[in-house]
Length: 309
Image (tube, rainbow, N blue to C red; front, side, top):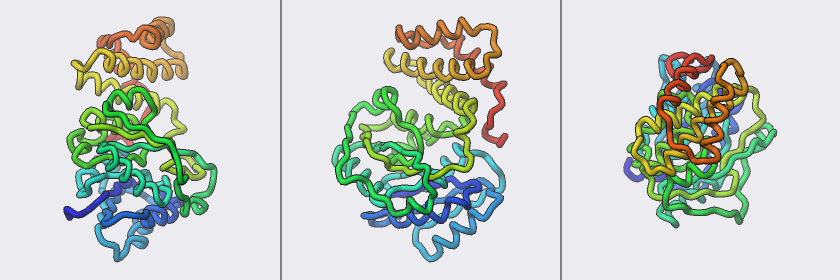
């Protein structure tokens, strides 16, 4: 399977409402020579797996992984990444729809700049999924290339699924941080540490249909996972350049500050605000003792975690 040009990795959990449209757009991606499709089910209780089996029947390079336990998004996306054979991996949630020519154009940009990562934007369309299956990118859109992928990720917004990353980079990064339930922040961060260049497209490469409930509604979950993404990365890489450490620290403290503002249950509200201002205005270096205390507080938060979904 060495001739696979791109591996699509999809995590699946109870998305029968969206899957017919998602799969229609996915299987019709243009300009690909020999794509691979990897579907990792997280013990869905609806007809998600049956829909995938029906719509991919007879197609080559299809893997459908049926798990016997529920572990969450980060664990399952890593399971799919480990099975990938393509030069590139493009990941998606099972309710995200790709414009028909998006993968083709992302690969072209990667080849043009010899970049290991390509990201675009996403849009919450408010439309039914059935109305999004035949969309294309604009003929002209802006993009930029940055050699230093990690600094680029820390200076912009590089979240959401739908990104295109070279498989060998994802293997080095070991995919998502499995201690964090939602993978959005951890994959770009961990991959950028190993990547040679990143391209950001100012064009919607992911179309989000009208939503009927997902994790994004749990703001405490998002704050927790953002904090843990940067906290874990800081603990794993304490000897990075000072400007990078300051950026990581700022993002971790910012996530914690947002959490405190929502819960307002700690007596140290003013102290946390001062710490937050120091990271924003003075580029403070990480205080690991403070970070550890924040992590301890987040450990009490009512959020979903791997093995506790």
